[in-house]
Length: 110
Length: 115
Image (cartoon, each protein chain N blue to C red):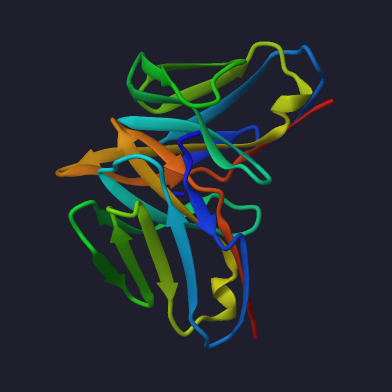
Protein backbone atom coordinates (compact mmCIF):
# COMPACT_ATOMS: atom_id res chain seq x y z
CA UNK A 1 0.00 0.00 0.00
CA UNK A 2 1.15 3.52 -0.69
CA UNK A 3 -0.82 4.89 2.22
CA UNK A 4 0.68 6.83 5.02
CA UNK A 5 0.03 6.14 8.63
CA UNK A 6 -1.21 8.60 11.22
CA UNK A 7 -0.30 8.29 14.84
CA UNK A 8 -2.02 8.09 17.22
CA UNK A 9 -5.16 6.48 15.84
CA UNK A 10 -7.22 8.24 18.50
CA UNK A 11 -6.54 11.21 20.75
CA UNK A 12 -8.67 12.68 23.51
CA UNK A 13 -7.79 16.02 25.12
CA UNK A 14 -9.35 18.78 27.16
CA UNK A 15 -10.46 22.01 25.55
CA UNK A 16 -7.62 24.53 25.53
CA UNK A 17 -4.89 21.90 25.29
CA UNK A 18 -2.73 21.37 22.24
CA UNK A 19 -3.21 18.37 19.97
CA UNK A 20 -0.37 16.81 18.03
CA UNK A 21 -0.76 14.11 15.43
CA UNK A 22 1.86 12.55 13.23
CA UNK A 23 1.97 11.15 9.73
CA UNK A 24 4.52 8.84 8.19
CA UNK A 25 4.66 8.02 4.51
CA UNK A 26 6.57 5.66 2.28
CA UNK A 27 7.79 7.35 -0.89
CA UNK A 28 9.29 10.66 -1.97
CA UNK A 29 6.68 13.38 -2.29
CA UNK A 30 6.01 16.68 -4.02
CA UNK A 31 3.89 17.98 -1.19
CA UNK A 32 1.94 16.85 1.84
CA UNK A 33 -1.51 18.02 2.81
CA UNK A 34 -3.67 17.73 5.90
CA UNK A 35 -7.41 17.31 5.79
CA UNK A 36 -10.17 17.27 8.35
CA UNK A 37 -13.31 15.15 8.30
CA UNK A 38 -16.28 15.75 10.54
CA UNK A 39 -18.42 12.71 11.23
CA UNK A 40 -20.47 11.72 8.21
CA UNK A 41 -19.06 14.47 6.02
CA UNK A 42 -16.54 14.86 3.24
CA UNK A 43 -12.94 15.89 3.81
CA UNK A 44 -11.94 19.52 3.99
CA UNK A 45 -8.47 20.80 3.16
CA UNK A 46 -6.56 22.41 6.03
CA UNK A 47 -3.02 23.11 4.91
CA UNK A 48 -0.43 22.17 2.30
CA UNK A 49 3.32 22.00 2.83
CA UNK A 50 5.73 21.54 -0.06
CA UNK A 51 8.65 19.13 0.03
CA UNK A 52 11.16 21.99 0.22
CA UNK A 53 9.43 23.53 3.26
CA UNK A 54 10.05 22.48 6.84
CA UNK A 55 7.32 24.31 8.71
CA UNK A 56 4.12 26.13 7.92
CA UNK A 57 1.51 27.95 9.98
CA UNK A 58 -2.13 28.73 9.39
CA UNK A 59 -4.10 30.22 12.25
CA UNK A 60 -3.99 27.69 15.12
CA UNK A 61 -2.40 25.05 12.88
CA UNK A 62 1.29 24.32 12.65
CA UNK A 63 2.63 21.70 10.27
CA UNK A 64 6.16 20.38 10.09
CA UNK A 65 7.71 18.18 7.45
CA UNK A 66 10.85 16.07 7.70
CA UNK A 67 11.50 14.51 4.31
CA UNK A 68 14.56 12.64 5.57
CA UNK A 69 12.33 10.76 8.01
CA UNK A 70 9.32 10.75 5.68
CA UNK A 71 7.17 12.21 8.40
CA UNK A 72 4.98 15.19 9.16
CA UNK A 73 3.21 16.49 12.22
CA UNK A 74 0.11 18.61 12.68
CA UNK A 75 -0.22 20.71 15.82
CA UNK A 76 -3.54 22.29 16.74
CA UNK A 77 -3.06 24.85 19.48
CA UNK A 78 -5.66 25.92 22.04
CA UNK A 79 -8.08 23.23 20.92
CA UNK A 80 -11.83 23.76 20.90
CA UNK A 81 -14.72 21.32 21.05
CA UNK A 82 -15.41 22.19 17.41
CA UNK A 83 -12.00 20.71 16.48
CA UNK A 84 -13.41 17.25 17.22
CA UNK A 85 -12.98 15.39 13.93
CA UNK A 86 -10.75 12.94 12.10
CA UNK A 87 -7.55 14.27 10.58
CA UNK A 88 -5.81 12.80 7.56
CA UNK A 89 -2.54 13.43 5.84
CA UNK A 90 -2.29 13.06 2.07
CA UNK A 91 0.72 12.81 -0.18
CA UNK A 92 1.10 13.12 -3.93
CA UNK A 93 4.02 10.88 -4.63
CA UNK A 94 3.64 10.50 -8.37
CA UNK A 95 1.74 12.43 -10.97
CA UNK A 96 -1.52 13.56 -9.51
CA UNK A 97 -2.36 10.55 -7.40
CA UNK A 98 -3.14 11.48 -3.82
CA UNK A 99 -2.72 8.87 -1.12
CA UNK A 100 -4.27 9.30 2.30
CA UNK A 101 -3.28 7.95 5.66
CA UNK A 102 -5.55 6.04 7.99
CA UNK A 103 -6.44 9.08 10.07
CA UNK A 104 -6.33 10.30 13.66
CA UNK A 105 -9.63 10.64 15.48
CA UNK A 106 -9.46 13.70 17.74
CA UNK A 107 -11.93 14.27 20.56
CA UNK A 108 -11.82 17.60 22.37
CA UNK A 109 -13.68 17.50 25.66
CA UNK A 110 -15.36 20.77 26.69
CA UNK B 1 -17.71 20.93 -0.90
CA UNK B 2 -16.81 23.65 -3.48
CA UNK B 3 -19.38 22.43 -5.99
CA UNK B 4 -18.85 18.67 -5.77
CA UNK B 5 -22.10 16.71 -5.84
CA UNK B 6 -22.39 12.96 -5.48
CA UNK B 7 -25.41 10.85 -6.31
CA UNK B 8 -26.96 8.78 -4.98
CA UNK B 9 -25.99 9.59 -1.40
CA UNK B 10 -27.28 6.26 -0.13
CA UNK B 11 -27.87 3.01 -1.97
CA UNK B 12 -28.67 -0.54 -0.97
CA UNK B 13 -28.26 -3.19 -3.61
CA UNK B 14 -27.88 -6.91 -3.95
CA UNK B 15 -24.81 -8.93 -4.82
CA UNK B 16 -24.30 -9.25 -8.55
CA UNK B 17 -26.17 -6.13 -9.60
CA UNK B 18 -24.47 -3.26 -11.42
CA UNK B 19 -24.14 0.06 -9.61
CA UNK B 20 -23.13 3.47 -10.92
CA UNK B 21 -22.17 6.38 -8.70
CA UNK B 22 -22.03 9.85 -10.16
CA UNK B 23 -19.81 12.78 -9.29
CA UNK B 24 -20.57 16.21 -10.66
CA UNK B 25 -18.40 19.30 -10.26
CA UNK B 26 -19.05 22.90 -11.19
CA UNK B 27 -15.54 24.36 -10.81
CA UNK B 28 -13.94 23.08 -14.01
CA UNK B 29 -11.26 21.10 -12.14
CA UNK B 30 -9.08 19.02 -14.41
CA UNK B 31 -8.44 16.18 -11.98
CA UNK B 32 -11.10 13.99 -10.40
CA UNK B 33 -10.81 11.05 -8.04
CA UNK B 34 -12.82 8.23 -6.55
CA UNK B 35 -11.92 6.94 -3.09
CA UNK B 36 -13.47 4.41 -0.79
CA UNK B 37 -13.36 4.79 2.98
CA UNK B 38 -13.46 1.81 5.27
CA UNK B 39 -12.75 1.52 9.00
CA UNK B 40 -9.09 0.87 9.64
CA UNK B 41 -8.09 1.64 6.06
CA UNK B 42 -8.63 5.36 5.73
CA UNK B 43 -9.24 6.51 2.18
CA UNK B 44 -8.01 4.35 -0.65
CA UNK B 45 -7.75 5.54 -4.23
CA UNK B 46 -9.86 3.55 -6.69
CA UNK B 47 -9.45 5.45 -9.97
CA UNK B 48 -8.65 8.95 -11.02
CA UNK B 49 -8.95 11.12 -14.10
CA UNK B 50 -6.56 13.74 -15.44
CA UNK B 51 -8.83 14.95 -18.23
CA UNK B 52 -11.80 14.07 -20.36
CA UNK B 53 -11.49 10.42 -21.39
CA UNK B 54 -8.16 10.18 -19.52
CA UNK B 55 -8.31 7.86 -16.53
CA UNK B 56 -5.97 5.63 -14.59
CA UNK B 57 -6.10 3.03 -11.86
CA UNK B 58 -5.49 3.61 -8.20
CA UNK B 59 -4.50 1.11 -5.54
CA UNK B 60 -7.85 -0.71 -5.23
CA UNK B 61 -9.24 -0.65 -8.77
CA UNK B 62 -10.26 -4.32 -9.16
CA UNK B 63 -14.01 -4.62 -9.69
CA UNK B 64 -14.43 -0.94 -10.56
CA UNK B 65 -14.46 1.02 -13.80
CA UNK B 66 -14.77 4.73 -14.45
CA UNK B 67 -15.68 7.06 -17.25
CA UNK B 68 -15.31 10.75 -17.84
CA UNK B 69 -17.01 11.99 -20.98
CA UNK B 70 -17.31 15.60 -19.78
CA UNK B 71 -15.11 17.73 -17.55
CA UNK B 72 -17.82 18.03 -14.94
CA UNK B 73 -18.85 14.37 -14.60
CA UNK B 74 -16.92 11.36 -13.32
CA UNK B 75 -18.77 8.06 -13.06
CA UNK B 76 -17.79 5.06 -10.97
CA UNK B 77 -19.28 1.71 -11.98
CA UNK B 78 -19.36 -1.56 -10.12
CA UNK B 79 -20.14 -4.04 -12.87
CA UNK B 80 -21.24 -6.76 -10.47
CA UNK B 81 -21.39 -5.58 -6.88
CA UNK B 82 -19.99 -7.76 -4.10
CA UNK B 83 -20.36 -7.49 -0.33
CA UNK B 84 -16.70 -6.44 -0.08
CA UNK B 85 -17.62 -3.28 -1.98
CA UNK B 86 -19.89 -2.14 0.83
CA UNK B 87 -18.26 1.15 1.74
CA UNK B 88 -18.52 4.91 1.71
CA UNK B 89 -17.36 6.33 -1.60
CA UNK B 90 -15.95 9.82 -1.93
CA UNK B 91 -15.39 11.82 -5.04
CA UNK B 92 -12.81 14.59 -5.09
CA UNK B 93 -11.66 17.15 -7.63
CA UNK B 94 -8.72 19.49 -7.90
CA UNK B 95 -6.51 21.54 -10.13
CA UNK B 96 -2.79 21.59 -10.57
CA UNK B 97 -1.06 24.72 -9.33
CA UNK B 98 2.29 26.18 -10.23
CA UNK B 99 4.90 24.15 -8.40
CA UNK B 100 2.76 21.11 -7.89
CA UNK B 101 -0.65 19.77 -7.04
CA UNK B 102 -3.24 21.80 -5.22
CA UNK B 103 -5.87 20.96 -2.69
CA UNK B 104 -8.66 18.50 -3.30
CA UNK B 105 -12.32 19.34 -2.87
CA UNK B 106 -14.52 16.51 -1.69
CA UNK B 107 -18.13 15.56 -2.10
CA UNK B 108 -20.24 14.47 0.86
CA UNK B 109 -19.91 10.77 0.12
CA UNK B 110 -22.10 7.95 -1.16
CA UNK B 111 -22.88 5.15 1.25
CA UNK B 112 -23.25 1.86 -0.60
CA UNK B 113 -24.48 -1.33 1.02
CA UNK B 114 -24.27 -4.57 -0.93
CA UNK B 115 -26.41 -7.34 0.56
